[in-house]
Length: 421
Image (cartoon, rainbow, N blue to C red; front, side):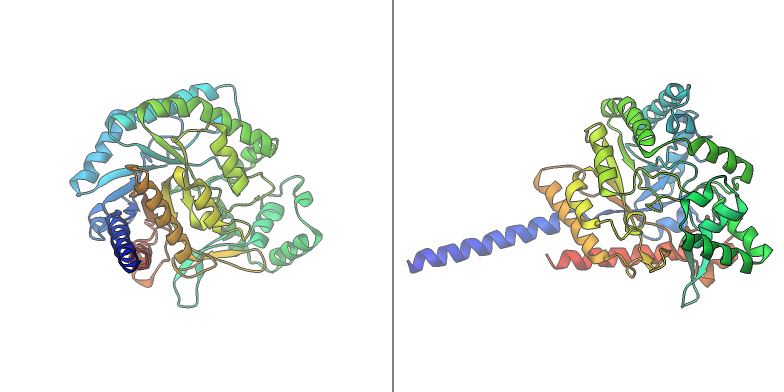
């Protein structure tokens, strides 16, 4: 009996050593950095110095809906490789409004989308992040919110958003979206604001999309709003499902993984429905066309802006379809607002999120998958004093030092979490 017990003890030690060996054989999450090209304040050389191996970018100069040529893609890829890195994720191949709103020519734009995916695959690029946000991309009401230490970050305030909707946009029917209390708060905000503050609020909300410095005009916004307001959530979900059923089979043939980005913020803004904001939304998307190639971009900040979202459950249940990771933190406030905190401090328990992501890596390793080193990037970053002289070059949230600090913090967190296994 004693010999048997000793043998069993030795076996446990050997097994434990094997498990530890396998854990440390796991490749780290691949460190990537978003780059918008020349003229956006950050060079590839600067990014390379951070120890980054992968670049996240797009053919930003090509209008939405047009085919990305082999030449346009290969030119950007060559610049990245010359700097000693690789183009690992496309963010984003934007979806034309004709697809989002089921217009008569949507099949034409879907065909163009497929051609772009084919050209990316021919250049050896197989991960594509995209979103299906109606009206505009992510929404903030303050791009220069000052935090206690003096750094600046991005903030969303529902009262300020209501002010834009009610008193600047003056949208017909806007009153029906807000409660009496919300309307009263918006009215008080509007009466106390200076003309300059209202102009700044309008400019902030119409800031456009990442990769462009051109502000959306109020006229464009108003016309788009009229079009979007006629769609229910079910309508928009059906339009996304139509897109996926057309595109995913083609993506399967060429090995391209599509990864939808959650809505930002993950709740209705200006009364427009959101369709990629909750656990159930993501479940619907994945089940619309079940395929490994129909996946997710896990954005902790976007999903974490809603207290209703259980980030750990999302990773646990949908982890095998996570093709790309954005990590940033937000501080949620009782009034429904939130601002972007440091990457490790805020309402999101980033340690638990990192643990869940590494557990997903362990599952992939055990199953023999080749995509264990999921690419991640530090999403957004604070604007520090040392970077403010270049603030006109940066797209909001994409300063260099703020993101570099975020990358360092997240890398340290990943190493620390791994050491506990």
